[in-house]
Amino acid sequence: MDGPADRTESIDTALSKAEKRKLYSGHLREPLLTELGNEEIRFSEDAVQLLKFHGSYQQNHRELRKTDKVRCWQMMLRLRNPGGRIPADLFAALDDLSDRYGNGTLRTTTRQAFQMHGVPKADLKTVIGTIISNLGSTLAACGDINRNVMAPAAPFEKGAYPAARKLADEIADLLSPEAAEGSYLDMWIDGDHSYRFQPTSAVRKARTRQHEGGVYSGSDAEPLYGDTYLPRKFKVAVTVPGDNSVDLLTQDIGLVAFADPSGALKGCNVYVGGGMGRTHNQDDTFARTADPLGYVKADDIFDLLQSIMALQRDHGDREVRKHARMKYLLHNKGISWFRSTLKSTYFKGELKGLRLEPRPKLEDYLGWHRQKKGLWFVGLPLTCGRLEGEVKTGLRKLVQTYQLEVRLTANQDLLLCNIGAPQKPAVKAALDALGFELPGEPAPLARHAMACPALPTCGLAITEAERALPAVLDRLDALLQRLEIDQPLLVRMTGCPNGCARPYMAELGLVGSGVNQYQLWLGGTPNLQTLARPFLQKMPLDQLESTLEPLLINWKQCGVRRSFGAHINRLGDQSVHQLLGTEA
Image (cartoon, rainbow, N blue to C red):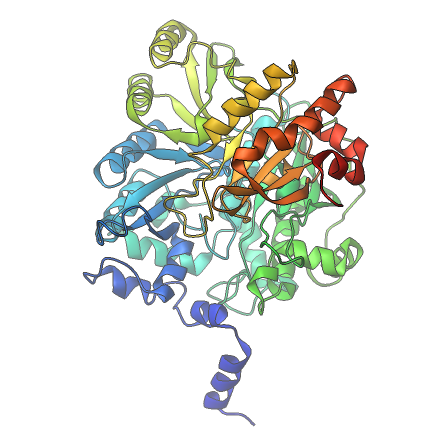
């Protein structure tokens, strides 16, 4: 029989470096905890990988490398706030923290959370501790774990909207790591704050079932995740029938919530296996849209979610990280295998056929909307989600003066909610002064365009995205005007192939592949139901107009009756390549 030393050696031989790092971390504590107390300007690689689970990435500001060896090392901090909800006091705290410790900006992410950039290592504990004190959290905003749970940001009190928002909050608690939550609070803030983060009784009851059957990992400390957590990141979104503001098919789990006439949750359509990340020149990595799994009644939703996560925990690829997302498991094994394995080993409830849904639409909630009787909300467009300067200061004053709730959208925009009817004129006047005279009517191309931060802070960026997008949109707008085309395109741009702005769902996706060069992806649709395809591998950005003009002229000649993406798909790849002057 093997002794303890033999078993340890066997584990060391079997596990990858990434898996060992998690296993021996003491549930995400070391060496991060020790390095928080030293005077180094940056963390070691081992600590950096654990830091992600706590909501932060270490970054090297490329434009400061030669001039400021200290400030070039900085932390990007990301919040976890289900459905994009930011209470007034938390928003004020984030504003203060970004000015005092960060680079003076906040940025809304494509997962409905705020990011803060430029935080020195020495100030990280102060920043995260202050966020926790103001009832925020960064736990599980990054790392091999369930990320921020998305839901429609609009605070509508109609249909299934309230049920979807509540479900997103509950899923965030349900899939929160147990031991890591304790590590998180112990590490970042003094005193016992666990009492502030108690889930609902229904969630607490469901979490007890993490110790049962195939869902149980074998670890009492982390009954759902196990001591090595998940193979890679995991993403969940909830929406209502017809509202695709959350890019549902790009999620590991996408839920469409159905409610009864009283607003109570009846059940959900469930989709599994979406994901955007890929690697250039590696055909075994790819973007993928989710498969329909079935309909589950409300009483079984929590158990199904835990079961799906446990299945991915046990069967996801832990040897090759680029293949570790659940989308590859679905691609390799198929939805039939996935469903049968789920039923035989993990989930004892009932899965039925999908319920009929209306045709989905990319909702953005920009402009003024009635929230309910006596209350309004207003959606404000933010270019690439960046909040800074006078606009940031002005919004902070409005939020504090009227105690407004902020909600962030998956399209990187911001909603001000709970505006009383008597307050509406004053809020509108203040927004006019900040440049939001017509918040519901942004430039058509900019309305749904997105970009990732890319250079100079993201370590994965190959080229520009956020800083380049405004000029790209201006050039595209000029081209459309010259060709007398009055229908916009859904444009998304990233500095690398990891897909943080979900470019593979766009009608026109620009994916960084070299300095000022981009892959050209075409064929997504405005309602985010169709995956785009790559047609050019390295298009110089200065050739944008000459490359696209033949396609746009052909679209116009066909009457612009369909969206640009639908027109590309109707043409077929061979015809598109002919118009581009390339080989299929």
